[in-house]
Image 1: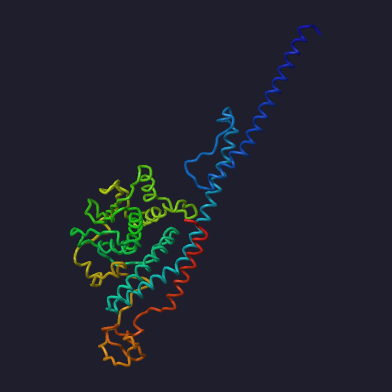
Image 2: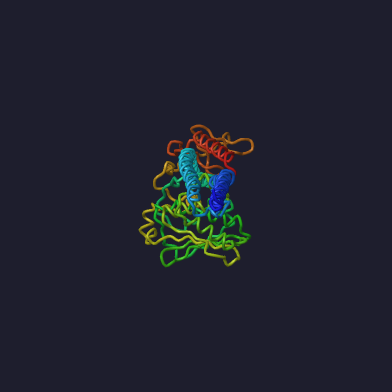
Length: 419
């Protein structure tokens, strides 16, 4: 073999060794990339999907030279498959959770509604100011508790659970105000322009629930009484809420408005911050019933202005609506609970008040308090006449059982889900 042939063989050998080293280097890079996928990228993808944190990205390839290659496409398919698996699982879990929550809260809502109806019936039977004042306090507590149950039902995808008659828009505002625990810090600025404006019964209860959320949030953060008023707008009527809180920056305002205008069904398993729950509830109601809610910007008091817009399609005017409402005389109880059209807690018709029976000295205790005797009716001055039990569909045992179920349901919920 001559020298030239030897050199050619040596060149071929060196080239083959180079190719082997190059292949070994690529193989090591592939192995390292696979380990990086298993050790870093997949755990990061699982963490992001499990916590449902939008905007957080999964780390990319460890070697940019692989970008756009078949390896990159294959690994991305793995990560996409993990994301789709979590999406299916989250949808199934959320659907099951919604069904459980709805079934769990249905009965407490019915019983709380019956309790409110019973309290209202008692208020119509009694005329003693002290008794009426006590019943109004109980009615306020019952309305607040019922609203808490409705929140869970709405987040679970159910309707608010109560169907109302067509009602004046002023009654809608007062109903929402009456359900806020700190309702004395909310000032309703009545307007003559809204005196003859009526809201269709289809959206009365949803509107009351949504406005309650906004008023409660404003009252909790306002340094002065919250102002709420009704204004005529080009496309309907607006309920404007002005508070004197610390206000919201642009990012917070955009985030809240996005929640209230979202077209995505609420996932109750990933609600996150409890402070955003109210916006989720308002958004769900706006999406289902067609009214709108928006944080319009800062209020005149340095806080936040929120506007709820009701379309003219859901508004009517004229005296005919007063006849549809049954001619019921306004009262504090009815303002907190607008007239109901169809509900398990339908208000009972009170029985006629009997004429007072003269009271004898033996019917009083030594301290002067009247004693209720079976078959006798005390005088209405110190205490109201005893009413017949039959016309009022209110069972104390049933109400007590309902409150117990309601308490157990909320205790279980609070233990399982921190707010």
